[in-house]
Image (cartoon, rainbow, N blue to C red):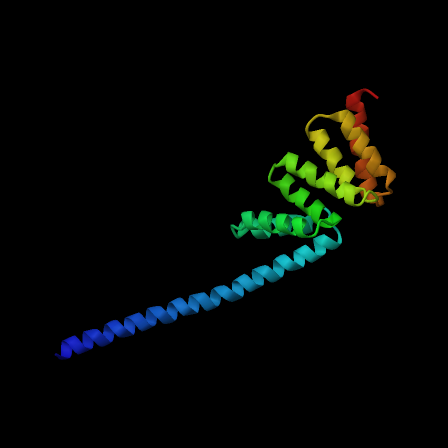
Amino acid sequence: MRATVFSVCAAAASLLAIGVACHADAVAQQPADAQFDRIADRYWQILHDNPRRGTAFERWYAHYHDAGRGAELVELIERRAQHNADFATQMLLGFVYEQLNRVDDARAAYAAAENIDGTQYIAPASLGHICIRERQFSKAAEWLSRALQRDPPPRDALALYEHLGRTRLRLGQ
């Protein structure tokens, strides 16, 4: 009888320990998810205020990709673009699509951004870069020229002039 009571108590203690361990894992997981979301939201705020390729975008994308949540990023930004089709969201959607090599989707997102705000230089510049990669040099020259007409910051203007110059050399101009 004693062995049976002891084994029942041991089994109950084991089950209790497993339950406590599972609860501890669940509690530990919640702060990790909350921290992930806080970091992702901070990157979103930075990028939404200034939608540009570069370190912030690369880290935001890597934040999702390294956590195995790349599909979640695409769903999130597509949902935000459907809810609030502003310039920054469309540009970020285009950057994500381009990163995933979904060029046609990226082109559509950049074109939507261009239609929303025709004063920003980044949308035509991005469209020009897609055209360069697809070896559509005459279209690329048009987009890059349009981007330069919008008075980009000096650092970006220099890069755009370099791309435009190389594009025109390929066209024989």
